Length: 180
Image (cartoon, rainbow, N blue to C red; front, side, top):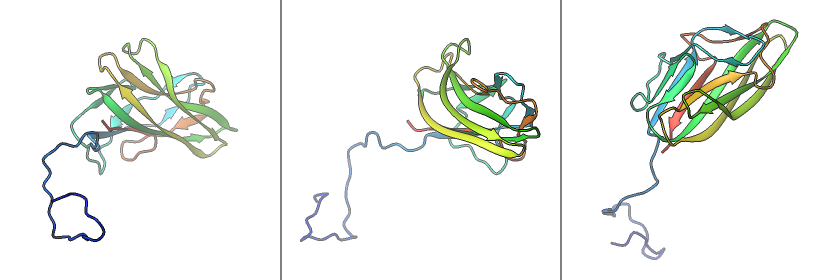
């Protein structure tokens, strides 16, 4: 039976189709993991890597097996592939106002050198604000690959600003989705 019918032939929902080939490039999400800052951290006034992170464990189920791990704020990955990354930071400034840049940096030499991959900005004027961004990247080799979330490549977070975290809710966090 042909897979394409003309309008005159009509489409009958009772028709069945046999498929014996393969589909290439039609994969779905292979894995997904979400991490959050597990406690509030004060700004330092200089380039600052976010830490401590934990994998989310509140009303959460990881998709697939463990692929991402984090140690001292640096994320490592077990599988090569193309990933979607969503990241966000929630802050509270108790001072007169604070502008800062939130960044994701990548390293291919175990953190010996990092390069900027994604950046967003926010301004907190003595209240709660957030910054977030999304990007896609490819990991071609897992050995030596590291990823970190930092603030202050251009303008640091002031010591009067708290980067919000907690072990029961997501306030500052990062999610990785393996696309292919």
